[in-house]
Length: 608
Image (tube, rainbow, N blue to C red; front, side, top):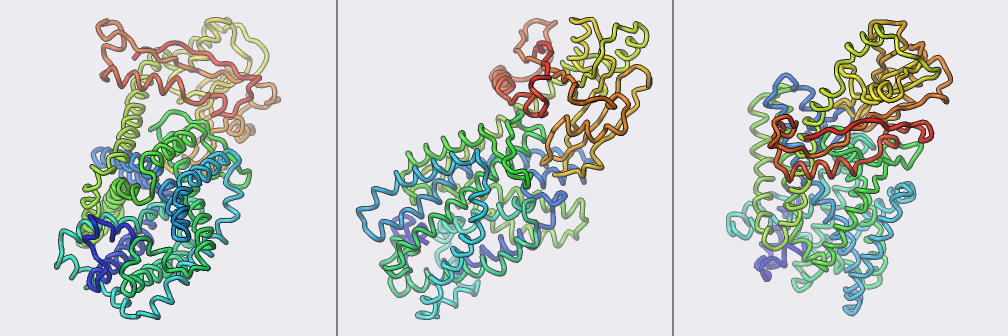
């Protein structure tokens, strides 16, 4: 409300028609996008219980896998949507915490100077404690957010009682009249109205943590009504006190309640920021497991909750971005000019993917898909277009962040495909290797050797090099593949699949462990699930040695016709980006959770 009435030097004025028009726009934006789109429609599209745009993308690709063009489009939309999420994830903690602390200036204008340092201190502590897990903040989540939303309702209700004419804003015709009377100003105002729905995508993304039913109960039972009461209350207050547009939210509270309200608001925004940070960890984890990012250092911070993870690289990149934004904009009002473009882009992409799913996979009637696209997609398109006006004043920042994320994801995906081809050529077919073992009968040494490897088509580099350099083969050998599926979770009893390699007496077995993109890639645990199925594992697993196959990627000479670089089509700068990402990705030993003291890394150079 503060932002919308500050547009272009108060071009939207707190008159009767303007206030009712703005409040009506806010209420019906919440109804159409949050209530109908997300809670009624999109949350039906769960990928084995998991939500979010990457989970939706994976669901579309799995259900429509026989349609190459559709799956390619879904992949592109998923990459763009996830990349835009990163742009928002840097702005949200900064704007949330700063807007709460700015309530101090309502108490004493001289305290405005404390907003910036206080925000930096709070955010620094928040990011610093991420390594310890979210358990402490999680325990406070329910009570604090309940108190927050009850406070929102309690602030708005007295003003509605004092000026009940504001209830007329519940009718959508006030929004329509405002748009018809002042179309340009209504269009510009939508760039501020978007601030009321910035967390909508998180409702969908959090499905995997709590489920759809609790989210719907929380929204319709507490959150939605509290928000509507508060916005109506702000509107009623502005009709009575038009000069209170400088900070209408904190103006609603009596003077004695301002400090407690600032405290509750600060706690609520810390939790909201935590949700965004956790969402960024989850999004990055999914992207890595779907082959869109390098391996990341995933640390599970809870033995009870598998979804509670910490990714140090993502945490500190996010923190650095938040500090830079605070230093540049220095107030929530200025940050609001940069906010909204990325989130509305994600809203549109989610709607597009959902409509593709509903029409092509669920076979919804065309008229229903078109109706949803026109009403909800049309509203989101208007909001997105309105936010394009913010590009010059700071809206370019989340776009630049998103463009960087898109570049990383597409470069990693394409570079990985090239490395896979070159590596497969160096490894050679596994069948040929097994024939050679049967024919040559190389010298054996006691023990169990385990070779993590992507598939059973080619021979692990470490297995070849172990024979090449040490001239021996272990008595028992197990090739294990961790196969990432486009689903969030696979039950333990369904994960392991043992494949016969042809000769039961050669001492070489093959195990496939299928995992979802929220499951661990723990190789020892995967082998523990297969112990009863493979004779090679009927030994003391504590004595097993793990051989990691590593391909060191280097850029070749494209002018050399014998170099792989001559056939790998990728611009030099993107090859440099891929090589840098490859060299800085997480250690395989940590990712596969193999014992450090019994892990050996072997491989060779691969040129691209």
